[in-house]
Image (cartoon, rainbow, N blue to C red; front, side, top):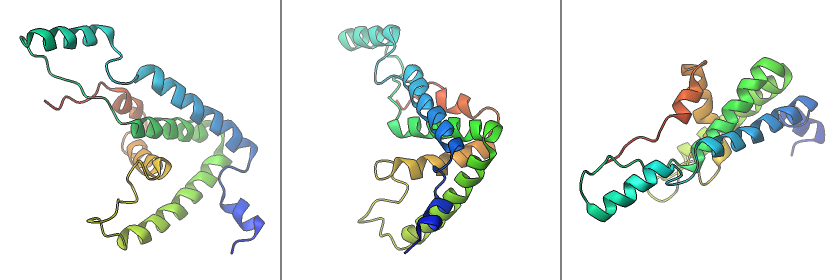
Amino acid sequence: MLSHEEILDTDPYSTRESYLATIIHEFGHIYWHQKKLSWFSDKKKSLEYLSTALSLKNLPEIELPVSSAIGEVYAFCREYYASQIFWSKHKKNLDKFIATRIKTLIKVEKNTDLNRQDSVLEPSTNPHDFSFVVGKILMTKHPTNWPDFLLAPPRTFF
């Protein structure tokens, strides 16, 4: 069992910086929801879909809603990006926490029967695990334009 000091040493949310980073994270959620409202939030598109459903003529491509898990990725990326600029101690603690958590997730995933259990990255199980895994990859691959990928219109599926 970890001592109180060991727990604080591995907790990225135990400092003043982490408090400030959490505010950025939560504002990331607010911004996300302003930009990515739920299904049919665009009045023009909604009306187009309604008219099309009525007439079944000139069928447009349909845009499906994005998962709320992507909103969690966006909030994580906002927090992490701000930490790179303003709160190096929080970023360092977060990186340490994430590395430890990923190692644990790898062990669990290796022993998970995906025919009977969800992956450790299933967003509904733990959206924060999903968000920092996807977020870190996205921010590493696209360090300056990651918001463009997350705020882009939904992909068309049919």
